[in-house]
Each structure stands twice: as C-alpha cells, then as structure tokens.
Image 1 (cartoon, helix red, strand yellow):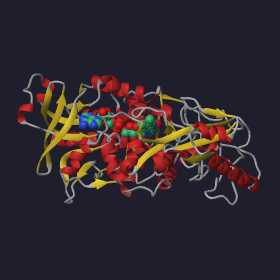
Image 2: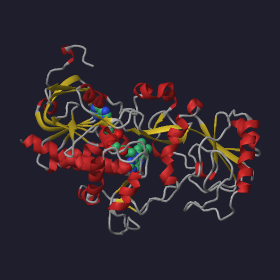
Image 3: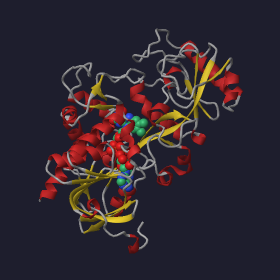
Image 4: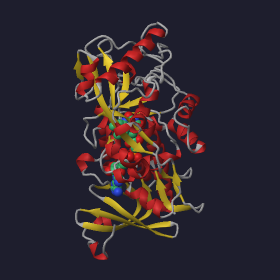
Length: 480
Ligand SMILES: Cc1cc2nc3c(=O)[nH]c(=O)nc-3n(C[C@H](O)[C@H](O)[C@H](O)COP(=O)(O)OP(=O)(O)OC[C@H]3O[C@@H](n4cnc5c(N)ncnc54)[C@H](O)[C@@H]3O)c2cc1C
C-alpha cells in the first residue's frame, strides 16, 4: 500500500518513465505469451516480473506439458486428440467448465497453440513416462518448464520487449473504466508507470496463506504451496477492489498430495506423490476416507490435495506393501519401511491398533471382491466388496512385508478465483461493462474455465490461449 506520495522516487532511467503501449504484469507463461503476442501485433511492451531473474517464470517454470487438440501423430504425440474428446474430458472434471463459451473457445484455440509455440522458439520432447500417462493428449516441452520460460525470455529480449525483474506491482489506479496508473516497487522505491493498455498475468493467490484462510480457516496453515511465494494475488485484489467481476469459486483450487516433508513453498514437481492407487490412505485417526482406486491416476491425482485438506490436521498417510513397491516414481525424500503394520503405524505416531484394524478390514473386503489381473494401465476392476469407502480398482491385500508408507499434505498448485473476462480477454466490471484498457490471461482468469476440477496440462493451455488473445487485443487497443 502507498504510505506517502514521497515514497515515489523521481525518474532516473528510461523504462519506467516512458508511456508504454502495453505493460504486462507477471513473468510466467501467460505474461510472456501476452508480451510476445502484443509485440507481434506492433506494440512497445514493458514486462514487470516480481521475481528476481534467477527465479523468473512463476509456476510455469515447474511445468512439463500442455494439452491441445490435434488431429495428427508425430514424434511427440502418440495419437490424435480431437476437439470432442478434449471437450468431454474437460466437462468430466469437477463440476465442468464455469463459462461454457469461454471454455469452448479455449479448447478450439488450443489447436493452433503448438505451432505458435514452435514459431516462438519452443522445442519439444517425447512424453515422459511415469504414473501420469499423457503421451497421446499432452505435448512435452524439451527440458521442461524452466527451458520453456528461458526460451520465451530469450525470444522476448530478441523482439525488443523490455523486462524488469524484482518489479512488484503494488497498486493499479483507475479513472472511470480505465487503468491510468500502475504503481510498481523496484529496488529504488515506488514508481508510477503509464500504459495505454495493461495485461494482468500475475497468477493466482495460492501463496497468500491469509487469503486462503478466509475460505479454509486455519486448515490453510498446513497447506504447502507448490510454486513460488510471489503469487500472492496483489494484482487480483486490486482488480476486485476496483469493481472487477469475480469468476470462479473461492475454494476452487488445484491441489495434489505432496510429501509432508516438502518445503512450504516452491517444492515444484518433485514433491508429488503417486503412491495412492497402489495401496490405501488413512487419516490421523488411522481410518480410510476416500476410494483410492476410483479412476485412473491422471483423472484423480488432482483431487487428493482437497481430500487431505478436509481431514483432521490436514495430514494423511499412503500405505502399501512390497508387492507393489517399485511400480511408481519413488518419493524423493524416501519412504518409511517396517516389518509389520503396527510398526509402520508407530513410525507415523498413528494408533497401531486403529491402523491394523483398518488394514484387516480392507484385506477382508478384498478377499470378497472379484479376482483378476492387477494392472495399472487401466481400471482393472479389482475392487473391495462391502467396504465403505470402497476401493474400486487395484485393490490387493496389504499383506506382504516389508510394509511402506509416506505422510502427505495438501500441495496447492494454483487457485481458481479470479476476474471474469470477455472473449477479447477484457476484464469485466460488476456493473456490466469492461475496463476498456485492462486484459487478463492465465491463472488470474482461470476461474472462467475451471470450476472445481482440473485436467492435466490445461493450465498452460489456458495461459497460452488467453495470453495470445490478451496481447493481441491490448496491442489493438494501444494502437487505437
Ligand atoms: C509444480 C507444478 C507443476 C505444474 N505442471 C503443469 C504442467 O505440466 N502443465 C500445465 O498445464 N500446468 C502445470 N502447472 C500449472 C501451471 O504452472 C499454471 O497453470 C501456469 O503456469 C499458470 O501460468 P501463469 O502465467 O498464469 O502464472 P505463473 O506462471 O505462476 O506466473 C505468475 C507470474 O506473476 C508474477 N507476479 C505475481 N505477482 C506479481 C506482482 N504483484 N507484480 C509483478 N509480478 C507478479 C510472478 O512472479 C510470476 O512470474 C503446474 C504447476 C506447478 C506448481
């Protein structure tokens, strides 16, 4: 917040004192795509990234792939993925798209995204293998999200886009329906930046634990944030305070199960746990609480953060036996091993009797279930009978020592509550109009598309599709 006008430092060098065509706020995928797109459409662009150069790239630098419609097979896609199938997949997660027209536009526009990315320097690699089988539907960036972002930054520099790091936007000033002032904190102090058009691509508010507490209470204190601490929603809050219409659910977020030993922030991709469908999950009381085999893992991994978030103390334990050990990516901090279930329970300070009873009841329900071949490639129908909650697939007895386990916490990837936009990515106002020179792309507007669920690889789709639109429209606006 501005404390005094004297806080503002006088002009000393070019970038912050010019009148820019387009100022892009943020430094992740949506921001870089917006900046490149605005530049392609003839605008002079300034990009303000809050992070230092070494940590540039937001959540996007942790990513690996993007999900797009395609009707071909090549060295990177193992098969076709038509519009109807992606649309159906999107409709099948959570309560379906928030705004059908904008979601349909996103899916439709995704088809031209890989070509656009290639044209802007992105290189590809064959799909990584592992528990999330995405080789047909998703395209993998060569070297992952860090390489992707480095490539985009290089392309931006080559295109003449001016980039400022450690430039944190603190306030947006409005006159009527126009943003007339961007207040940014840089090393020298606070500065006012002027732009004909502004693209807000500063992510969600997942790193703002106090904001999460408004909707989740003290449970939020136990959440881990998978990406950097910079996405605290400052710009989103400014837009909402200025009268922007909300999109998305307050408690909507993408959250997975992460290793409870992960760092509080920025653990990235490596702290994810993929052990859940191989065994059972118990809570602090040693009780199961959700079907671990409800569907194949790519369709279910993203519900486990929420599942754990609503358990006592927001902690849960994934347990399995030696039959399946080694069939999944190993947890990066190692696992606890024990000769008996009660010994394993003690390792986690769980009540050994409660966990033994849970495992015994589960094993008995497996015995009553159908026999068959255990296979992770598909729903194998190996289910429990008479157990609540059931385990619908991959149910095998937990009976072969050593027994293994790992403690899990909710790991928040990004939040969905954001600003409503038009098809031109204009930020909508509560009074039915728009902020005529303010555009939004990426996580900050993902609530227009995502309600409660998530489809792997679609975060980057949203950022790229809407970054292209926002950059183009901002440039058009600036040209008048
Ligand atoms: C570990 C992990 C793995 C993921 N893997 C995938 C994947 O493989 N595929 C996929 O589709 N999605 C994936 N996601 C989700 C994906 O990262 C997001 O959907 C996507 O990166 C959002 O892009 P964005 O540009 O909107 O936000 P971000 O990339 O988070 O960028 C936000 C930017 O805004 C900057 N910023 C914030 N506040 C300010 C401010 N006040 N002033 C200036 N700058 C500010 C931040 O520093 C950051 O640079 C993953 C996320 C995580 C955390």
